[in-house]
Length: 374
Image: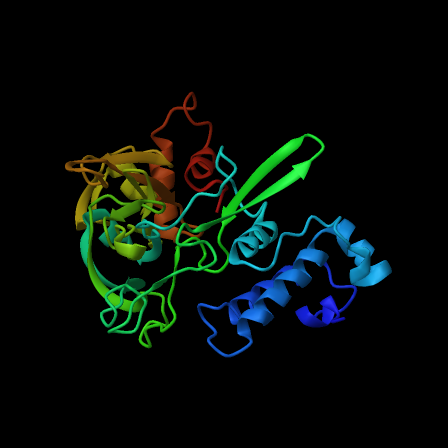
């Protein structure tokens, strides 16, 4: 008698996953709808019989100990003389794969299928994210094959009804247990639930009905986007199979940093350094904003680490570009580490005008201005 392990091309210590892969590969190779060579159908049945015996741990143990004679009639194996029996055999193989519906069968995929959504990560410059822009991108996605128009079959041919499941896309097996009879339903392994077999596939798409192409798209980036913003482009994902609708494209935004400006929501932050004289007397200085250089008034008597606000110079609110946040400017006072003799005399003269009640000595003034006496 033929050795079941040799028939499947596996070793005697092969695990369950190895058996499944070997069986599925051979079953498709010798399926009568695909292989028209003499003896293919007999080989197909032989493969099914071998897997039926080895797939179940109990029957495999009896086979390992006694050979095929140990199976007898207790294995529960169906009659292999007709394709209905093979439908039961295929169910044995695929039972338990994936989620089943409440009736015990797996969801069929015979009709049109929604295309997959796609993700595209897009880096955007700091100011472009604030004011928006249009960008051209190239995305690889699946489109319907123009040669076979999505059928997957070579032009002039067409799919054939699967003889394993009779076109239903499902196979069934009745099992007798001590608790009664149970009918199990699963996706047909020969046609993958399609109910049809493509014997002569399209050369252009390999029988898939779809091809991957790179497509140019112009993306409108609205003002106010930030890192993590997700833009949805409807209908630009992968095409759906069997005439199903396409998926969508989701563009995820990553905003580049700016060397001078920082952003938090709709607010822009920056800092400037002014001299102690500018802080005392006041001044007007130029600063960088998202709108370009603007004049900022430093009020006299400005204290170190004071924050000055420029209204409506921040980021437009996403979806409402008319409303903008503010630009907050942190003022840092830069004190000199050295002064000239002339500067010292002037500062000492200024210090002498202060009463002892306010400032005890000229060195006290230096301490307030410079942090230590110079």
